[in-house]
Image (cartoon, rainbow, N blue to C red; front, side, top):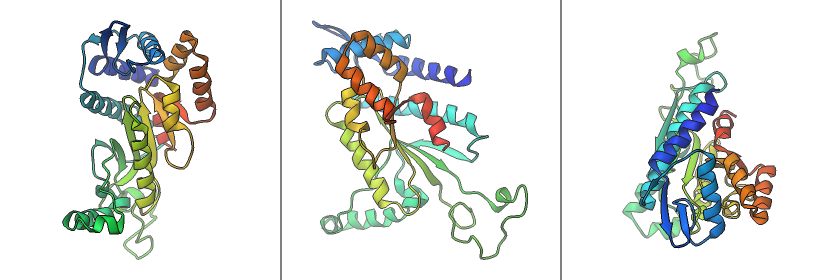
Length: 282
């Protein structure tokens, strides 16, 4: 099946481009595990075995791993979401590191950011953050009237529907459909950055809220919980290999981690990467 093949290709790319195995006196472990946590190393080792990964040895800089994870995940989303055009049609773009001010719902932030940059003292007065650049964004281009009228005449040059940003005659900017935060691991409180970005997206938008999700390879469910539990900011967290993670946690017989993992899944706070393209079609 197409989506199974795409998922397998995603795992192959993650394995080849990002995963490295390092060795210590305590044994070998992948670079998305916490070297100070036996549970993290055990689970991560089981995950790479379950996805059929034979990783390279050595190390890779954390920032490099993060950038490659963004690129590989972006490529997977683009490849998989393109198969759902019959469900969610549109002209889509998938980009990394784009300022929110480039999108229709956040265009107003550009002027505010320029004002604060020119007069630093205004930052404390206005409480304005710098413009966020999400890891990955999925955006939709507005529609021409010809595209809207393809089946029957729905609109024309009159004043009706003159403010909606979906019409290209009203708006030239792409519409932010999804903001995707990529976290190779969730060590060092990295989950809080994703939460802060999500809240700023919600707080500063003019218009509808885009999908706000996070993707991670973190092996410890208790760490994933720091990002996934609760509601109001992030829609859902997606694991790059959730089925393999559950198998790994069961194999290591870590009851605490298994209980938390099952809680996150049952509570609809954690899903597999293969669920993400379908959720973006909602």
